[in-house]
Length: 309
Ligand SMILES: *[C@@H]1O[C@H](CO)[C@@H](O)[C@H](O)[C@H]1NC(C)=O
Ligand SMILES: *[C@@H]1O[C@H](CO)[C@@H](O)[C@H](O)[C@H]1NC(C)=O
Ligand SMILES: *[C@@H]1O[C@H](CO)[C@@H](O)[C@H](O)[C@H]1NC(C)=O
Ligand SMILES: *[C@@H]1O[C@H](CO)[C@@H](O)[C@H](O)[C@H]1NC(C)=O
Ligand SMILES: *[C@@H]1O[C@H](CO)[C@@H](O)[C@H](O)[C@H]1NC(C)=O
Ligand SMILES: [Zn+2]
Image 1 (tube, rainbow, N blue to C red):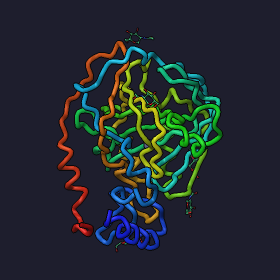
Image 2: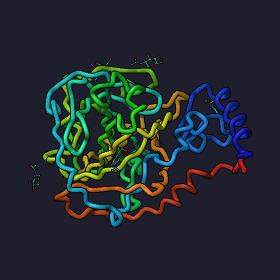
Image 3: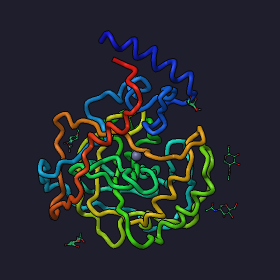
């Protein structure tokens, strides 16, 4: 409690110094001039909440929920053209609201607003969610809001206002040609604020190939960037999206606003705090191969001299 005002003053000065609202850990330098994940609670108090994302999924603690039926995807296969934007934190593709999902034990139909990605360095570990400690090279979030809302900011006031479909990626030997339109466009949007239009793409191009997407995990959590609103019904799919190392590495050529490589665009893991993770019926055993010691990662990310405490 005593620490709160100190932290507040501390973070205020950082924000003045950086002129940016928040940044990822990879952007925090030892001079602490941008607001990294440990201080996002000052950008938005929700980031200090008890139902935050991402989380590590411990598969042996998951429970089967038979109500997690398959989704009904509307216009996932239809071509659209959409703006692809470097927003300074990630690459975002705006989606037409005619794209919708229902089923999957969602209470109502949700409409798509955008998708974006989280990645590492040159194809190294970069997903936000981890499964039994394994961090995947990339993670895609397709963000949907309840049909009744007009914007994300409206939807986040409802504890189930947002439905995010999460897909983790795996490195493949050969390139995933369906991703080339997006990857080729990255070189046109190197700097924050740059955008371009993707002509004739469909969500089917970006989701796991030849998969019916019936196997997924479900839990209640938050947006993984400030304001961190606890308004997200998460669905994480078991099927992965394959990309070659070179395709994965292309994302590392984007730039943050300070001109540095846009890399490690993922939030550190958040505690479950008693939340239960469920899995859908007809689910095969989740294969978890590599056990990554998260503490190693955390210690690598905190190599600057400790300033608080
Ligand atoms: C943060 O500090 C580093 C090292 O002092 C400097 O190179 C960088 O430009 C600063 N970034 C911002 C956003 O002020
Ligand atoms: C990228 O920029 C080049 C050169 O300006 C242009 O010819 C090309 O159509 C652009 N591609 C995309 C996908 O924006
Ligand atoms: C990207 O943004 C920078 C900075 O605003 C600008 O100078 C550059 O021309 C933009 N590039 C493209 C391809 O639009
Ligand atoms: C999805 O695929 C699995 C195996 O590939 C199959 O057993 C299942 O019946 C399929 N479900 C639907 C709804 O097509
Ligand atoms: C998520 O929260 C809603 C609303 O409180 C609740 O009905 C639902 O059972 C929760 N789902 C999970 C997976 O915990
Ligand atoms: Zn995301």
